[in-house]
Length: 499
Image (cartoon, rainbow, N blue to C red; front, side, top):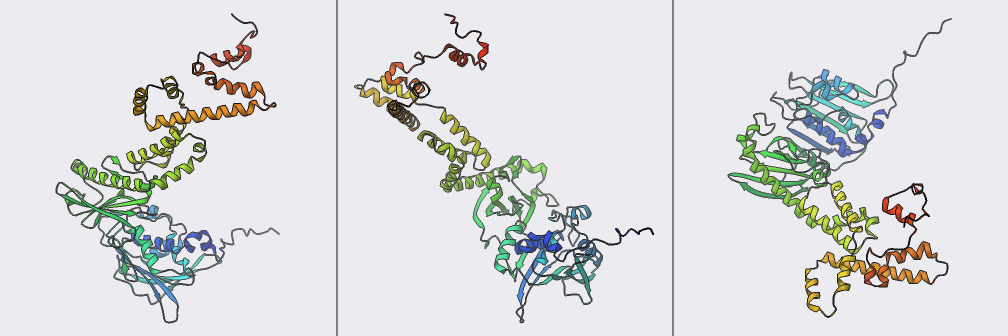
């Protein structure tokens, strides 16, 4: 009897913890989970997101997240939620659609469709209620983690939860990963405050620049008749770090470190990652494109003085910060170059510090890699420099000629003095080494003492510290060094002297 194929009779099976395991970071980190859910509201064209963390009389805690975006129909919901790894860009594009159908100036955050699972961070089930802006269709659906043939179960609720005129409401009972309203508010504000047209509240409280704890400083200045207010914030992990212009409380284009034709900072550098700079003004309306996607190209020359002023003030702030934090920055780089610096002279260490200070002053937004390259060059050059020439001046000077000595000293820099002191220290150590080794009968004369004496000809008098006096060496050795010959066979008969 022929055996019937059964391999295709059984569909895929999912363990109960499938979604929790593959999205472990999302389903265990409350801040990340709520950030993803707020980002979904951003992508839905919302201008407001209200989060409420409520403890009811039976001691149960509930979280609700409500936005005023475009909402969803039941058909759209089924497609979005039932498609694992839903590709938002492929199906909806990267532009956000707003409820009033106005031209979009937002770029969608969504990419891989995992954000909608964020509420599983708090419980095994939650309720989605949405009202579509297009047809005013309201529905509610309970979403539950499952096992078997599907990772989640959908159960439509006949009586929908209350919603605004359009938008989406998410509701979950907190079973795990407790959160505090104040902590969540600060975390979300750091990520979304760059657009003043998008507000977030937690239990009725919202955050603005005026009371945000990560606001560093505010400066006001004027360019001709244009008044500008620069607010510098810690960007932390906000993806859109850079310089953003707000005209009348509305974001122009997107935050960027490029102003005009100049790049102010690199996002790979410390400052490029750390800061968000918001320029508030009410005087640039005539320079903005109709869709608010940026400034008009034909007016960039008129805007250049403004860009230059913003750059000047931000760079000045970076210089002040670098100066204030110089000791910690120096310690950081000294640890990076510990092996090179531990045996270096005092002069090299001094030049290392001065070079670091000069780079931070001249290029306050230089990358760490660039600074390391400069410091490495300083160290390598310092190792190749000696103090013989300056020491020779001292040796040849008439000790009674105090006037000449005073003139020489007045012309020396601190670096030159360190060079001399380092050379003296090196020569004293050489003498001590010769003295100690020469008293040891086991010391190999040719292999150890001979090279030391060769490098210390000055022990016989200053006149011997010259290239005119060289050590006795075999002709073959000298020829190899002089002509850079590696192969001894290149000398046909090294024992037959040409002289």
